[in-house]
Image (cartoon, rainbow, N blue to C red; front, side, top):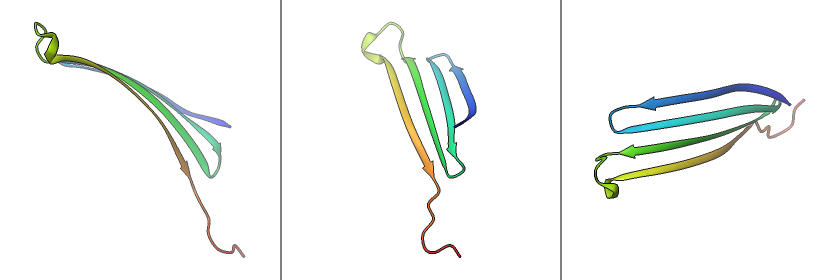
Length: 72
């Protein structure tokens, strides 16, 4: 198993902050797996708790090359 690039990002503006981290792994020449997670803290109106929210998401993705038919 070969490690691929690790990635981290941070994004901020006047209303929100977002953090992301992800990592990919090369299992073999035909198969890669990637995983990532992020956290968002949104404050559309800092004085109104009903307009603000936080969100966490995560994902795992797989990419695999498939070969069909006969290889001569």
